[in-house]
Length: 135
Image 1 (cartoon, helix red, strand yellow):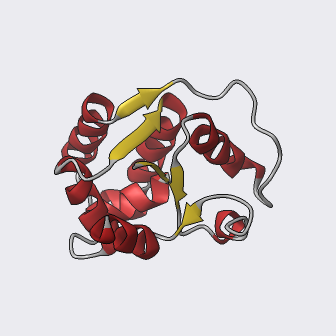
Image 2: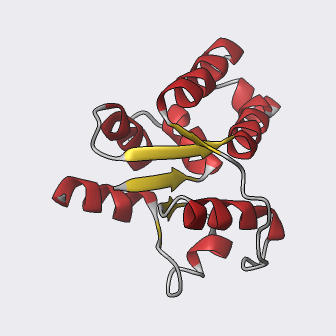
Protein backbone atom coordinates (compact mmCIF):
# COMPACT_ATOMS: atom_id res chain seq x y z
CA UNK A 1 0.00 0.00 0.00
CA UNK A 2 1.29 3.45 -0.93
CA UNK A 3 0.20 6.78 0.57
CA UNK A 4 0.77 10.52 0.35
CA UNK A 5 0.26 12.19 3.72
CA UNK A 6 -0.84 15.82 3.54
CA UNK A 7 1.75 18.14 5.19
CA UNK A 8 -0.87 18.99 7.83
CA UNK A 9 -1.12 15.30 8.75
CA UNK A 10 2.67 15.09 8.98
CA UNK A 11 2.77 18.23 11.14
CA UNK A 12 0.07 16.81 13.39
CA UNK A 13 2.23 13.72 13.89
CA UNK A 14 4.80 15.90 15.65
CA UNK A 15 2.25 17.92 17.61
CA UNK A 16 0.20 15.01 18.98
CA UNK A 17 2.39 11.94 19.55
CA UNK A 18 -0.65 9.92 20.69
CA UNK A 19 -2.83 10.68 17.69
CA UNK A 20 -3.62 8.85 14.46
CA UNK A 21 -1.12 10.87 12.37
CA UNK A 22 1.74 9.95 14.73
CA UNK A 23 0.71 6.30 14.64
CA UNK A 24 0.69 6.44 10.84
CA UNK A 25 4.27 7.74 10.85
CA UNK A 26 5.24 4.93 13.23
CA UNK A 27 3.58 2.34 11.01
CA UNK A 28 5.32 3.78 7.93
CA UNK A 29 8.66 3.52 9.75
CA UNK A 30 7.80 -0.09 10.61
CA UNK A 31 7.32 -0.81 6.90
CA UNK A 32 3.55 -1.27 6.95
CA UNK A 33 3.03 1.05 3.97
CA UNK A 34 5.12 3.08 1.55
CA UNK A 35 5.12 6.83 2.12
CA UNK A 36 5.44 9.07 -0.93
CA UNK A 37 6.72 12.64 -0.68
CA UNK A 38 7.89 15.26 -3.16
CA UNK A 39 10.03 18.37 -2.89
CA UNK A 40 6.89 20.56 -2.98
CA UNK A 41 5.29 18.57 -0.17
CA UNK A 42 8.46 18.73 1.94
CA UNK A 43 8.80 22.47 1.33
CA UNK A 44 5.20 23.01 2.44
CA UNK A 45 5.84 20.93 5.55
CA UNK A 46 8.92 23.01 6.35
CA UNK A 47 6.82 26.20 6.01
CA UNK A 48 4.10 24.80 8.26
CA UNK A 49 6.58 23.73 10.92
CA UNK A 50 8.24 27.18 10.85
CA UNK A 51 5.02 29.02 11.83
CA UNK A 52 5.71 30.81 15.11
CA UNK A 53 2.66 29.16 16.69
CA UNK A 54 4.08 25.71 15.92
CA UNK A 55 7.71 26.62 16.55
CA UNK A 56 6.82 27.02 20.24
CA UNK A 57 5.79 23.34 20.32
CA UNK A 58 8.21 21.84 17.78
CA UNK A 59 11.81 23.03 18.09
CA UNK A 60 13.59 23.85 14.84
CA UNK A 61 16.04 20.98 15.31
CA UNK A 62 13.15 18.49 15.64
CA UNK A 63 11.42 19.94 12.57
CA UNK A 64 14.60 19.67 10.50
CA UNK A 65 15.26 16.13 11.70
CA UNK A 66 11.70 15.09 10.80
CA UNK A 67 11.94 16.53 7.29
CA UNK A 68 15.33 14.84 6.85
CA UNK A 69 13.82 11.53 7.99
CA UNK A 70 11.06 11.87 5.41
CA UNK A 71 13.44 12.92 2.64
CA UNK A 72 15.75 10.00 3.35
CA UNK A 73 13.24 7.28 4.14
CA UNK A 74 10.14 7.92 2.06
CA UNK A 75 9.80 7.47 -1.67
CA UNK A 76 10.88 10.85 -3.06
CA UNK A 77 8.77 11.29 -6.19
CA UNK A 78 9.06 13.93 -8.85
CA UNK A 79 6.59 16.76 -8.46
CA UNK A 80 3.76 16.46 -10.99
CA UNK A 81 4.32 18.76 -13.95
CA UNK A 82 0.65 19.73 -14.08
CA UNK A 83 -2.20 19.50 -11.64
CA UNK A 84 -5.78 19.67 -12.87
CA UNK A 85 -8.02 21.92 -10.81
CA UNK A 86 -10.01 19.63 -8.56
CA UNK A 87 -10.11 21.06 -5.06
CA UNK A 88 -11.93 24.15 -3.87
CA UNK A 89 -8.44 25.22 -2.73
CA UNK A 90 -6.15 25.14 -5.80
CA UNK A 91 -3.09 25.08 -3.51
CA UNK A 92 -4.06 21.48 -2.63
CA UNK A 93 -4.30 20.22 -6.19
CA UNK A 94 -0.63 19.21 -6.30
CA UNK A 95 -1.35 16.65 -3.55
CA UNK A 96 -4.12 15.06 -5.63
CA UNK A 97 -1.85 15.03 -8.70
CA UNK A 98 1.03 13.53 -6.71
CA UNK A 99 -1.18 10.76 -5.32
CA UNK A 100 -2.56 9.99 -8.77
CA UNK A 101 0.88 10.03 -10.38
CA UNK A 102 2.23 7.62 -7.75
CA UNK A 103 -0.92 5.46 -7.59
CA UNK A 104 -1.21 6.23 -3.91
CA UNK A 105 -3.96 7.04 -1.44
CA UNK A 106 -4.09 10.62 -0.22
CA UNK A 107 -4.46 11.09 3.53
CA UNK A 108 -5.70 14.48 4.68
CA UNK A 109 -7.82 16.27 7.23
CA UNK A 110 -8.49 19.15 4.83
CA UNK A 111 -12.21 19.42 4.07
CA UNK A 112 -11.49 20.68 0.53
CA UNK A 113 -9.70 17.43 -0.21
CA UNK A 114 -12.00 15.14 1.74
CA UNK A 115 -14.90 16.53 -0.34
CA UNK A 116 -13.32 14.67 -3.29
CA UNK A 117 -13.36 11.28 -1.51
CA UNK A 118 -16.33 10.04 -3.55
CA UNK A 119 -14.27 10.45 -6.73
CA UNK A 120 -10.72 9.74 -5.54
CA UNK A 121 -8.98 7.57 -2.93
CA UNK A 122 -8.74 10.19 -0.18
CA UNK A 123 -8.99 9.23 3.49
CA UNK A 124 -8.78 10.81 6.89
CA UNK A 125 -5.84 9.79 9.06
CA UNK A 126 -8.15 7.68 11.23
CA UNK A 127 -9.71 5.86 8.22
CA UNK A 128 -6.31 5.14 6.67
CA UNK A 129 -4.97 3.95 10.02
CA UNK A 130 -7.88 1.46 10.19
CA UNK A 131 -7.00 0.24 6.67
CA UNK A 132 -3.33 -0.20 7.64
CA UNK A 133 -4.31 -2.08 10.80
CA UNK A 134 -6.61 -4.36 8.80
CA UNK A 135 -4.06 -5.08 6.06
